[in-house]
Amino acid sequence: MARTVDELERAVRAGEWLRPGDVALLLVVSKSTVVRMLNADPPEIRYRRISGTGRHRECHPEDVLRELAARREVHGQ
Image (cartoon, rainbow, N blue to C red; front, side, top):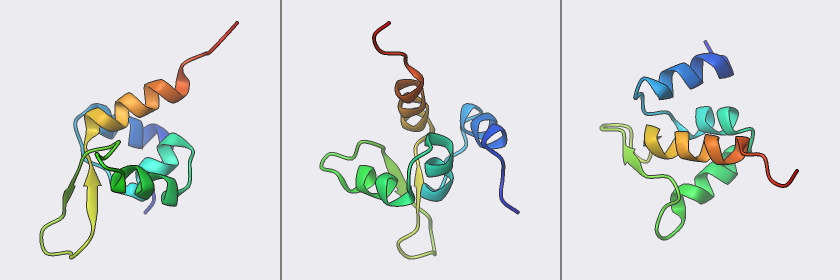
């Protein structure tokens, strides 16, 4: 069952590593945007590979929180 944005935010604040689709929902961007962030050199969001799943990745909670804060920041007046 899919989690809500509030549940995802609580999870990442508790230190849970999230999958790119969940990060996209939380940051209000497309999954392809998150994948581009992961594929950047160096990655904008650190990640780890999920053991036994091939290419599946999980995003580092500190980096997700940093991106979330940056997107919530008010610019200008």
